Structures are given as C-alpha cells and as structure tokens.
Image 1 (cartoon, rainbow, N blue to C red):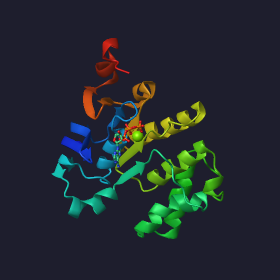
Image 2: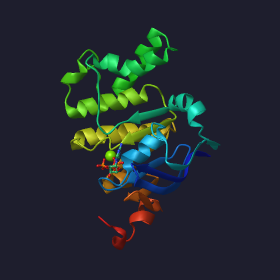
Image 3: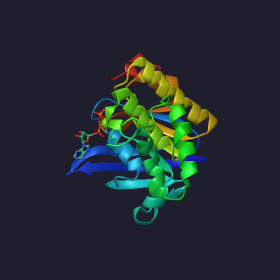
Length: 233
Ligand SMILES: Nc1ncnc2c1ncn2[C@@H]1O[C@H](COP(=O)(O)OP(=O)(O)OP(=O)(O)O)[C@@H](O)[C@H]1O
Ligand SMILES: [Mg+2]
C-alpha cells in the first residue's frame, strides 16, 4: 500500500524554483529519509507533505486519492504529526504543551488525555518533567517535548524536520530509539529529513537524495551511497 505519493511536484517562491519535478512515493509503514545539504528544499518538501504549502504544480495523493486542498486539508492534517526544524513551545507546563493538540481536537476525556500525555512523556524519557515550564528546558529536552506533542495524537504519518540536528549523542540516541520503536511496533509511516548520512543509514528503509530542489537518487542506503563517486557534498 502506498501511503503518500508526490507526482511532478514543483514549488516556486517569487519565480525562483525551489523544488523541481519531485516524484516519489512512501509505503504504508515505511521509514523514509530525505537527505540533502542546506537549502536543497527539505523543509519546503516537508511543508508540502504536511499540506501547509501548496505546490506551484504537480499532484499529491494520500492513500491513492488526490488531495483537494479546499476539502481535504483539515481532515488529512489531523492524521499527520509534524516536528518542525525550530521548536516553538508555549509559556506553560510541559504537560499543557503536550496536551494542547489533544485539547484543540476536543474529542477526548480528561482522563484519556492524561493517560496519553503521561505515556508519551515516558516514551521520550521525560518522566517527572510534566509540571516544569516548557521555556525553562534545555534544547534537547525541548526537542523531545516537540516530538511528544506530535506523538500524542497518534498520527498515521509522522513528518520530522531534522529532529536531532542540535542534540548531543545521548539525546540523538533517545530520539532515534523512539522513532524506530514507533515505526516497528505501531507501523507508523515516517518521513524524516536529515543532512546526516549516518543517521539515514541507521534509520531508513529507503532514502531520497535531494540536491538543489531535485531528487537525485532514491533507494536503500547502499543503492544511493554505494559508490563514492555519487557523494556530491
Ligand atoms: N517562504 C519562502 N520564501 C522564499 N524562499 C524560500 C521560502 N522558503 C524557502 N525558501 C528558499 O527555498 C530554498 C530551500 O529552502 P529549505 O528551507 O526548503 O531548505 P532546506 O533543505 O530545509 O535547508 P536547511 O538544511 O538549511 O534547513 C532556500 O533557498 C530558501 O531560501
Ligand atoms: Mg530545513
């Protein structure tokens, strides 16, 4: 089953092409990693997958159905979790930050919200942090709260924009562990960006190599990076 498909997606900002004819698909339950240098278009591509931006041209399909932005954006975005490159937490407790996306959905009881928030805090190894103000956290802790915020809604598709870029090795390993378990145990489809090829090798089933807005290669790590001559940065 194909969960998400992009067909000839291009994006221009004020006439400048940032993504050009991007075509790929991601299978249900796959861990898919987009690798590319600064400015290659990774964030733009994730924002398009999160339906925050519309492509200038091209099509997007979810579960085989072409996305109609007017009709589908709100219901589809409820099934998508996104961890942004820059973490933005609110000036309130860690608990309230994580509960927030559940409260705005409005469909869960207080007890169910508490159960989910406490579980997810355990997953990201932040047990005991629930009453702390989120703005007093270290960068690594804040990044894990942002991950918890995305996980608490139990998304079918999880998008992560360089979720470990500023973390130390211990935090990197916690985040990678959470993502691996989520993908293996819950079969959550994950699309993550990184400029760290070693991380891509550790996590990805398939990799897409993005450079200057174009997909240069797609495949397993070996298929993409098997030959030294293909390393272009
Ligand atoms: N809203 C915007 N308006 C104009 N240009 C933009 C906008 N968003 C992105 N760009 C441009 O598109 C290009 C790709 O940016 P993008 O943020 O997608 O790259 P990236 O691969 O995520 O880079 P990084 O590794 O630094 O996060 C850049 O040249 C950027 O300046
Ligand atoms: Mg980026």
